[in-house]
Structure formats: structure tokens, C-alpha cells
Amino acid sequence: MLHRRHHSGIGAVLLSLAATLALAACQGAPDLASLRIGPIPQPGLLFDHPPPPVTVVRGGPAGELITGAVPPLVPQETVDDVVAESLRPWLTAVERRQLAEASQRAAAEFTLQPVAWEAHDPSGARTASGAVVAVNNVYRAVRGYYCRDVRQLVAKGNEQHQDQVTLCRRDYGAGNWVWVIGEGDQ
Image 1: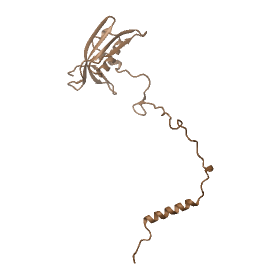
Image 2: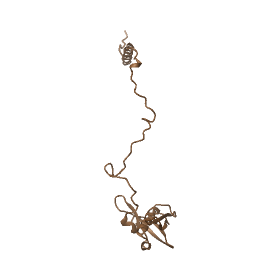
Image 3: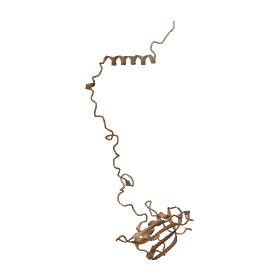
Image 4: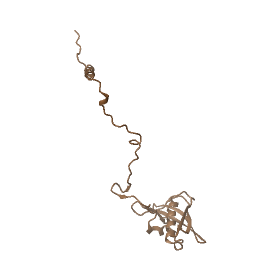
């Protein structure tokens, strides 16, 4: 006589499925009035909410809150380190700052692309203007500094002055890199 297995794994699954369906069929159909369906959300109420405002901080979650005006490209104590020595006595402090800021932008600009600048007195009248032009590509100096030659042009009153300086990129701490006057053989 052939021996056959009475209970297989598939048979057990089919048996439990049939029992579940039989129990479900014994229950009556649910009354639709007894079902409570909440309000259907309207487009715009749940789906189109703008994201919450984000507070941006410097230095991680417990860092300094970034608000207000943008900090200057050149710290106050290094402004004269960026302006050519021959132009310094001829310019006011405000004019030197504007020239120094333009020099920072020109050092990162394409070669021969002028970066214009203007300085104004408290009444809004222009006191001086000019441009800074990078005259060659950035190069690596002997001691590892990145340097670039720029021409600083200034027009004040009826006079025009210009000087060419080598700006080298220096670290002043806290991620503050400033292009200051240096020598290409540094």
C-alpha cells in the first residue's frame, strides 16, 4: 500500500484561508451609516503648506545666528594691506575700503575682466571711482601662496592714478581668506 502524506504545508495554508473566509462570510454586511469618515482634505490645506521657516546659524545648531548685513570681504585692519602703497595717501578711508573690496572680487574674476567700484560721501555724492583688473592668471608662489597680479585704477576729481600690485591669498583665521599685497616669489 502506498503511503501518502495526509497534511502538507500548502494544504494547511489553504485550510486556514478557507476558515478565515468562512468566518468573514458569517458576519453581516457593515452598515454604511455607522462608518464615520472624517472631512476630506481640500487641496492646499494639507498638501500645499509651505515649509516652516528655517533659522540659519553659523557653526552648527548652537552657533551664531546669521542675520543682518553681509560681513565685509576685507577686515578693517587689513584694508591698507590690499591697496597699492602709492594710492593710499591719495584716498580716504572709505575710498580705500571700496578699492580693497573691488580688489578681492577682481582677484577671483576672469583675467582682464574689470571690477568697477565707487565711493560716496554721507550726502551720496561720488568722491572717487575706478576699477580693478586681474592682468594674469592665478599662480602658485614659491612658498605655496596663491597669487595674482591686479591693476588698481582710481579716478578722483580730475586726476587718474593706477598701480599694479601682486595680491597673495592669506588666511586670517576662522576661514577668513583675504588677498593682500605680497610678492610672487614668496
